[in-house]
Amino acid sequence: MQTESSYTDEQVLNRITGRIPGRALIVLGTLVGLGLIGFVIGLFTAPQRTWQVYLVNFLFFSGLAAAGVLFGAAMQLAKGHWGKSMHRVAQGFGAFLPASYLLFLILYFGNGQIFPWIGNAVNAEGHPLPETWFNVGGLFLRGAAFLALLYILCFVFMYYTLRPDMPAAAARLSGWRRGLTDWMARGYKGEEEEAGRSRRILGRLAPILALSYAVMLSGMAVDLIMSLTPGWLSVLYPAYFFIGAWLSALAGLAVMATLFRMYLGLDFFAPNQWHDLGKLIFAFCIFWAYLWFSQYLPIWYGNMPRETVFIELRSLPPWQTFSIAFFACVFVIPFLLLLWQKVKMVPPYLASVAGLILLGLWLERFVAVVPSIWTEGGVPLGVIELLMTLGFLGLFGICYALYASTFPLLPLHDSIIVGAPRKGPY
Image (cartoon, rainbow, N blue to C red; front, side):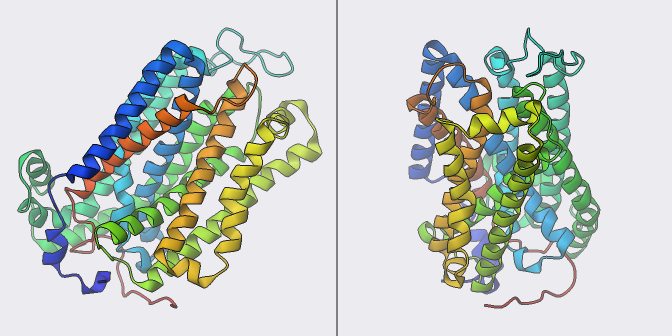
């Protein structure tokens, strides 16, 4: 297996296929088809279940996509040379953002099944809520505006990370991919000048993107999760939400890089890079658990109805089992396993732990949303939920495959970070 440093430009460019492999397209298309079938059947048989799992998947995959682009910005801000070659793989998650925006607009048609305050804007204590905030039109207008701003920033960041390599990539492509890469390379002034210009722009853009990510995903948490329990207040929950999305991107990067390594023979990363990624996942598992406990503790000892209503519901059957399950998947099991150096350095082991974290974070979004709005008994987790989640996964996979088949997965000319790299321990 080759590592990043042993790949030549020619070998990297040869990996640009200009098409999605046939078997991958069949699998991903089948998943999307199953999702559409589940959505249509659900609309006629169980509309509330359909729209609430739609919201769960929108939150999970949109957070994953935005955080994937943020990875490059984080490497730029922290001067993380170890992750310089990884950011293209993580950045590919951002290809889902146009689909995410469309999915958010479609969510408007299910608002009556999701938001319990429609027509009854009162909190748990019976006090009226401000209608200037709790109205459907305002929620979707500000959501559309904030998401557009964040997603545009993500695409500008992606543009400048990719631009230095576009003439070389364009020569390998045809059709709409050639048109896109030619457009991205317009006014090209040479490799060194373009790489230097991109570094300067990305150095200014990275902190703006990081701040916007925190603010916009905080707004998403308030409007699409906290408002489902009218009157519930938590100043910490928005941070807990966007840190969860960031952790999902780190786990997703480990899974995606391992898939490339196992099935396409693309061993882009050296052992010390896998080790550093594993340590970062380990650190944010702990930080995520810290935020969860920091939110739970004051709610528990404060014992105020408008705050305890959220935690109490999820601490009792039938939701208690799912709350324990997602905490175990995101923190307890990964914490114990990632204490071992070998788990962090062997890609299949790290990917297995990362996959468990992704499952736990999906369950966490499910437990955050559904108990607040589900009006019948039991836990609505069955065929409809499975089919729609597979559909979202398939759509996410198609978006990523379009990115991976169009752009180099390793940078030919460094567009982030200046200075000499420092080698980490093996």
